[in-house]
Length: 612
Image (cartoon, rainbow, N blue to C red; front, top):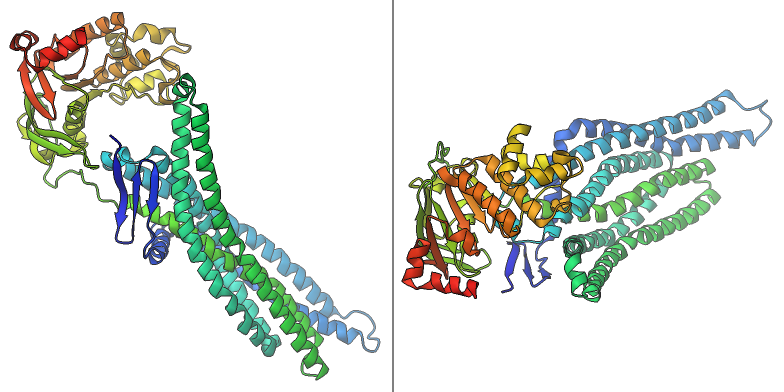
């Protein structure tokens, strides 16, 4: 049945996901974006303050050098006007000095600009690494429900597209904000010294432009947040399409997948164009403002020169100062839109970092030491976060060293039992116990260290075969790895691989067959040597001969440990010490294969269905 989940909801808005459709509310979101951005700067960028302090110092030097251009130009023009008078016997030394000072200012500005950019980039990149690390730690160390309840592409998008927005905002703020503000202030003072009347004209005109610029920035933030979320949807679609290529080809679904992808690309383009449209309006606004300012300056200067109220040197100096300040003002104008995009990305970062984990160790939790492996479910009720009921008063036990098979129809709640035993979720009521103690009394790490899981879908990482087996017990020797592989009937095929144990498994183990992946997953569990072994259709991908060998190995391996088995194959179930039949989230029968066949209940019906 399709699931509907509220992927995130706060007092400022909700994002509701249903059947692939994302609906986002932006209510009262503007202040939140600004707060998130400043919080990100305070918590993630300020720890690298030394780099930004160096960048700010260089920005101040750059600004002083730039602000001096206008006044130096005024002095040069005044000197040139003097030369236009009666013959003076050549160019005076002070004029050569002024020209040399302008060249020196340009050299100083270029060098400080380079160091400023390098220092700020280093600080921003180090902060980005911190952000990515903290996000990844929060996701992998947080609730399983959050990871399983959202698209993987949505999470990937946070590490790529959101981080790009944060990087761009960080670099622009670091490189342009200080330099731009200081340059504009410096130019303003030099203009006041040269001609305060012209300066007033500019002060009256330019602030008018910034009201629409700020409004456009707020619009960019709202659209950017939706665009960043939609990128995650497209990323999930692409990953799903490429991973399911075999099914697509087998069922001739190329047109269907192409149409889905095109809809995603078109929506991405539509949202991106809206963001670009808002951002594109900033430069024209500043351009027309600059044009109006220039017209006003020219008109006022022409009239004042005709009245003898100012000089050509003052005019040229002010124009030179405006030429220096204009790019900085334009950069500051576009900076608001970039900062708003960064604020939208920062919102999404803190959605992850601030989410309180529902599953966490209690303050009085202790280490689970030397467990015997007894497992007991006591009247356990559980409903998944999306509202799907799973267990409705389940009770059963597995004694230390006993193999218990869990059977029942699909959706009966069998896999949920493993999720609760691993404490990926907590039951709504009732309790799950190990060795007679509620597992919530133990730390999660020590609990999981006492368990080994082999799932139906064997998950391998893009590393060597040996490394994938060694994940069962980090630091295991090569001899121990090989012994586990032999026990799982994997040693021979591993030696036949190019590179043997050093062969790469590939992404999700794609370089290996399904049966090979399953046997490596079994070897990993065997290497872990945990007192509680959970097998979820662990031999489903094996042929009959391999299954027989693996079952023999597991029979030896599980002799002194508690083994819970989820299986449909009769050959796997009938050898169990006890069988628990689960229907509709409850245990309805329990006993050995022979006992349950004699009883003629639910188990016998399942066996007869399989045999038929």
